Image (cartoon, rainbow, N blue to C red):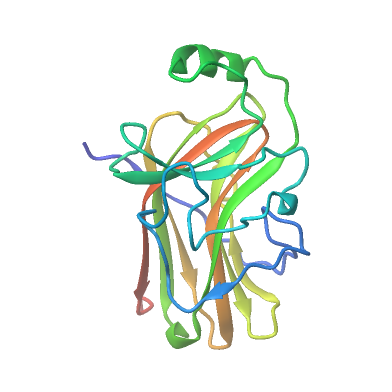
Length: 216
């Protein structure tokens, strides 16, 4: 089944701060893109290569383990995918319908959790990075999920930032989304991933990062 592809509008800004994490929580910059299929690690664990791994980095109140690798039929293509959870309702495992109804009735909370990876892109300067993924979200009114891409200059300032603008994800059905990002001539690293604001769960699968020459 072919899913619709939604492309986020490009927003170049000098916004400060990572969209999901406290500024005191600095993520390790990986030399290469890692674990995009979530095959590293075990279901139920925080996915290796992705952060923040310390729950203290999230805006409180936060779940003890807000990010984890999952497997099985809940993924889009599998065998593994990842889920962000923000204070989900307490419902017995396996009763997805009851759990979802309880989630929709839950009061709004202004929490934020995220899945983030930082990678050195100095070798790709002058090219275009396209981050693409399948996403879905089970969230009540006022909550939302987003993909994001932030490219830093060598001095750490922001050269590019896009978090899907006016098109956050609130649908429980899988759809593909992508963000194209120009890698500047003085780019240092890229941060990319997904955020969940408010209550609920956000799922991500079938990730890809393509590096191409810019269109003329």
